Image (cartoon, rainbow, N blue to C red; front, top):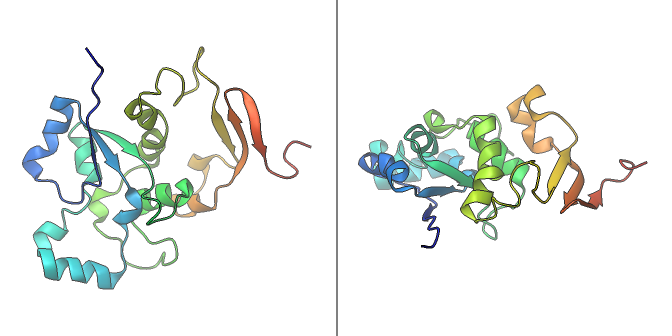
Length: 183
């Protein structure tokens, strides 16, 4: 029997009664957390169109995770940035990168940094059926990984978007090294 890994994407509005079904059915929540931040005018537009109660349930990624859903994260490129650092920071803060003093949208749905990193690595590899060869550093896997210029847990999450990749290895071979890094 084929290994079926059903995925549902975007998940802007999910009926609360359906949250536990993700875990029960083994469905993966494919999330694009850049949309969890919005300008005040956009937040008001959603309240006007959907009402306050439904707007407060927009992008319920923490609720899905708390209900046992696996989160796999990615961009929504080409309609948003493909920069994972910005997307991860937004998923954790629910703040716009260019407006960090604006009010967060639905802060009760923020995710923690570890959850976001897992969603971008091991969980996405699983969702794509690449978990046998990538997504985590384990003996027998391809050794595809990136080295960051900082320990993300040692800095405020509000600065995560400033994190830079200084080296990228793909299947054990260095395919990118920042200038001055390999010297």
